[in-house]
Image (cartoon, rainbow, N blue to C red; front, side, top):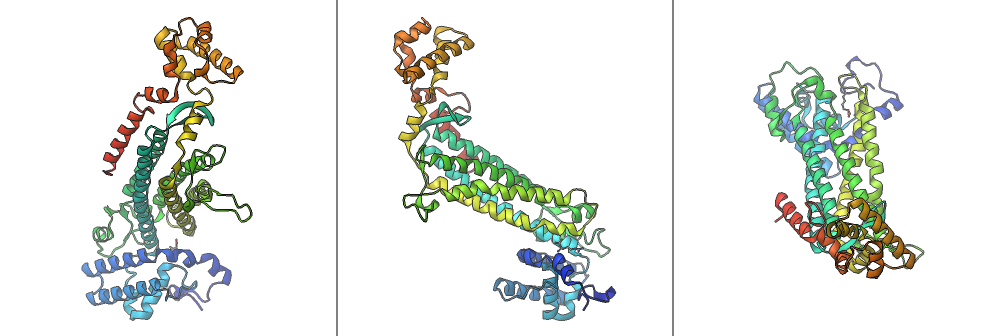
Length: 461
Ligand code: ARG
């Protein structure tokens, strides 16, 4: 049998494989709420502009509400023969209300319909990420406050570099998340235009009111160019770019949790709530959530590359290629949602071992830069020379298996006669972090000031 929607010019129905490759209902049923909201706004506008009668509008809207209830309750039979969510709903509407259902598709096409549904879906996901990122940042700020003066080693090349505070480290992630939040908001702002009413590609001759539907569906305004509108998936690419960068940040945090929770580091302990055990090794507590967060960019970056590749080189306007836009975006939404929620939970629950952090901060001659700076400040050495002198002090301490602060004054004096007793005051990790008061530096007072600034900005007070 030929298709119930366009069977007019067809003598026979599709091959089974044709039906299978063509149908999107298995995944685009996720858009049913958006599809029904769009149809209700469209029917209302059609009646207001005199394109359909008020009576037809009322039966269309009542029918759509029934369908919404059926789908929500799991009582709706999705059919592959009806291809996608748009035609599944419309065909069911015809079963429920008869010929009036056929008037709903006036001045509309599946091309603007799918552009609308998908855009609404991505927009509401981004709005949830906006809230999720604010929670995540709040968790980081709370941790930072608890640990404004907890000293830990700062790393470059994963080698101990200089002492920093854990609060400052948390705030580094708050900065990343705040940029993610700003990317998220930019994306929402840019996509806040309603595609509905651009019809197949050229617009329509019916006297529709696109400003009315745009407003009813919560958009700032309607899109301006019908050809662009039915071809455009930038809004999904914007989402995926934001998601890829955000997931990258979360994966870096997750990797640190994985490393830091090993007995070798012992900087943090994960809560039981965010750990798993081993089926064979009774002593194990594994950071599976952190590892999964670390892995999520695999899927999310894949989704970004996938959609960029689907869209590249497509001539205007709609081509069926564009049906391949949804699955991976849906997967990216779900993946990022979990990654963000798990990261927030892990940060909130994380137990920090201050002693282990402090001890590690003192290893690896982490205050060597402080010694070099002291020689510049107190002995007037050019920095390059003080760097050299300090290097020799480090070599001497390393030879003897002791720390810089354990070198006797006479030995330091032998390296440079200007050294005095006063040098020892800068060689502790606490003195080191307290001295880093330059704007953006790690000193505890800076950390507390930065927390206050962020709370104010994000209205978390
Ligand atoms: N299922 C289609 C999609 O997801 C809907 C749009 C179909 N439009 C068309 N002209 N075939 O892209």
